[in-house]
Amino acid sequence: MSEPPDAADARIVEQQISYYRARAPEYDEWFFRHGRHDRGIEWNRAWFSEVEEVREELSRFHPAGEVLELACGTGLWTEQLARYADHITAVDASPEVLKLNRDRLRDERVRFVRADMFGWRPDVAYDVVFFGFWLSHVPPERFEEFWGLVGSTLKPGGRVFFVDSLRAETPAEKNRRSAPEDHMILRKLNDGREFRIVKVFHDPEELSSRLHGLGWNVRVCTTENHLLYGFGEPSPRGRDSTATSS
Ligand SMILES: C[S@@+](CC[C@H](N)C(=O)[O-])C[C@H]1O[C@@H](n2cnc3c(N)ncnc32)[C@H](O)[C@@H]1O
Image 1 (tube, rainbow, N blue to C red):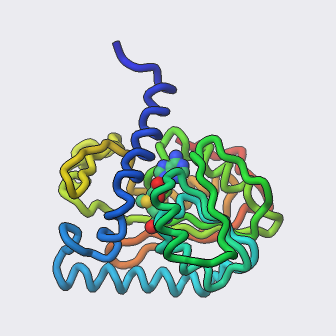
Image 2 (image 1 turned 60 degrees about the horizontal axis):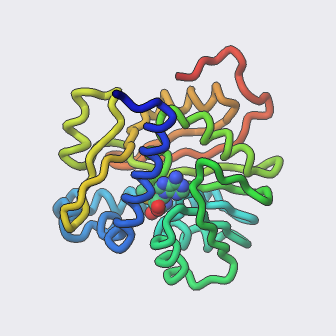
């Protein structure tokens, strides 16, 4: 007997949380291209240079004031945000990454909140909301709900910035191309444990037009090989009632 869609959806969200809790101590190895994530000198060089490009874009965007970071992880982007923000609220479902983040930042201006984003509601409004390598893990059925949450966190005049993977990196992600509508992939930890999680590689143009339909003025850009990023704000005209969203 197959599972009802809501139960399956809740299970996927739980599975992702379990995966990132277990992955916490080794998460940064991926970002810094250590161990099995080392893809060779040229590949790594392009990766770091493109990460730097996005950091520079973030600097021009200037995430000042009260900043909310969703799915903050171990603090790789929190420390960038801390260069511009007055205060940061950093939300994540994993206590393990929150501890690593707190230890990395050691900054009293950062408030850490442990919460499952799907169900969490902000208690104050923010000037900026940021999320790094998170949008690709939002189950497609929850895309609209997620952007509703993002909108609900902002003050009038508030802005959003996000960065994510542009395309498949691992063989598991690449093999899935044969079934592009299947957004589930298998991820392994260093000790061999396996988890199935969501990974959606958003097409930049499609993402931009979908967000436009949901009432956002967001510019979606890419670096040469690896990264997709976007920034903007809610459209003053609000949601486009003629647009459809899948
Ligand atoms: C790919 S990591 C990105 C971390 C960080 N933003 C970065 O770029 O380094 C995804 C993060 O989302 C968190 N996460 C997963 N599911 C979540 C959920 N339902 N609610 C809140 N956080 C969640 C994980 O714990 C993990 O820290």
